[in-house]
Image (cartoon, rainbow, N blue to C red; front, top):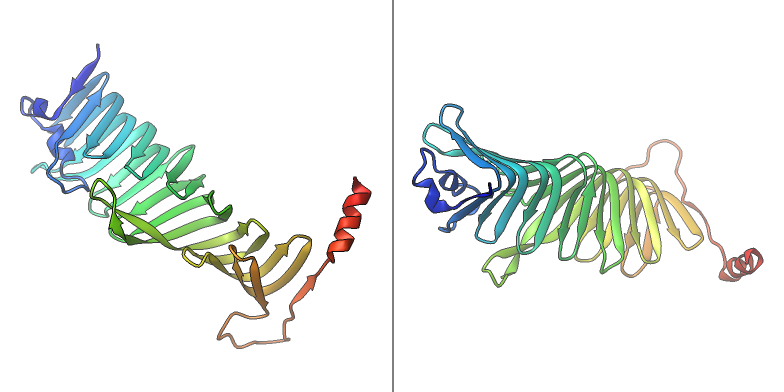
Length: 281
């Protein structure tokens, strides 16, 4: 039998599940709506409430879905954590996150998502990872681990690495719902880094992508590929928007040690490339 649990139902039960959720991140004085197909069970001794069966928790414009939702609390019913398991989806007016498991730690003010099909979709970016996705609210910081990829579809750009750490800044304008969006400041990438734009690819060991100028600064074992042209070095800067790239033998303010390193590359004239294309055709 389909059971629907709303905030006013909590006043009839020993522990108010909706009241517990009310302590979560959103501080606005809005009701919490709990929706579950099977049950909502609250255990005072175990200090937790569990909603089972296509569970849903909504507060204002923020919604969490999962096969099971669990909220943990203290003797004073102060919320300590919330977990969602199975087909997890977290929605706000501007972002949607997907995964198999999600855990919100109140003390850390952190959301950690794990399991398969990890993805976050915003109005301008698509972020995927194989191991984990996490967001630190007070730090305005997101971390993606395991073959992490952030795509910017409108710009036809992407940044890929073993680990991506994104830093955000609050936007000056509010949404129609009165919420402030965040804007990407930069992304720090480490391990097997690849950054690409419409006309070129940059690879290296670590890099920083700056959101506004759309510039990537890349370090160690750097390779810049534009068309058939390839240049290698130890430090580079590439504008993914204008397709202007710079390559240097050393990073700035670095004192060379040992033999002087050189920049090397292969520049292929367009007519050669065109003739090769004609031959292959």
